[in-house]
Length: 445
Image (cartoon, rainbow, N blue to C red):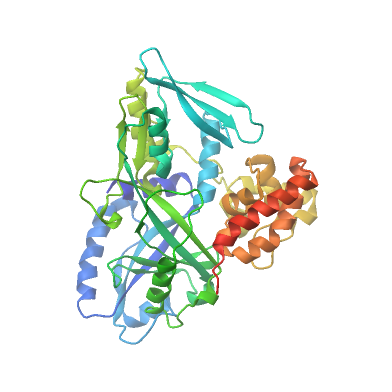
């Protein structure tokens, strides 16, 4: 229920980053229509005023109107419900700038190397290092909040090596294909695959995103890599529902992410672990928030800051984020091209960059919608410091089409070199680093 409310607030506060999306559950068995119909009614009631659209059952013909490339043999009909879709990279950047506008200090490419302690041996700050300059930093605080996701236990152990782990990391893999495999604006949702998992095929930035897996892993990596069995599972399961079964040659990009699930004693499968968040305070006084999911990020932050304020004995203050507009909240979308819509009001500034330098209005690559001006904007205004920052964390180029991202990387490096005053050695090192990372997004034939 909380997730449904937060989803509605996210649409309200960041309409430039969130849109509604129809999910269709195809029915091939006689019992699926009444079963899913009952579930959708409950979903509709729970969503209430926060719902994105009316759920209903679909005829066979209506199902194929939504999903024209769906396998037709045995198809009886479907069920449609509405959920939200957002651009996670853009939301993260816009949230950071919203925090800055509220008085936060942002430190990009600064790594925490340890904690400091007071006379009572409680954590009262962090030691850090600027990755670029090598400068050592120290920041003191009444409360230190560990919000490092899948890496939460690393910082906890640096404060107290004896702590028991909180995180049970799980890997999820996605494959990206051409929109030919799923034309239109509706997604496929398969609630029960052959091994009990859930599969989605979703329209995403003019492509199709298919996933996901839920694979327990021993430890989290900064650059997780898809396992062969995960890739084969997605390909084979997608082939059971799509008229044209996708193959390895059709994969434009493959990527993996890590879920910071909260460990539960006696649970073997990460698929059974709760996606709810917890706030944990170690004996050292270090506060850790972990678990949760993107949809409930605001509620997680509210709970965490309220707890931190209590620990720090600060005056009570009501939370303001429930109705706080996210940076870029559009006053008007008049004159904003669709490709720049995710920037919200910042799109006008990017258009001004293009007006001053028309060549920056050119595409970086014919296969993707990103403009040269976006590279310049990212370097000037969004703290992009690497080629990877631009192609993976400001745009979604690497995730959409890894080969195209590699081909546009030299142009991106040239533009960033001009903005950040890189010499040739730095530029070539940036390109080499990006090629190493991008190799993991390419699927060997």
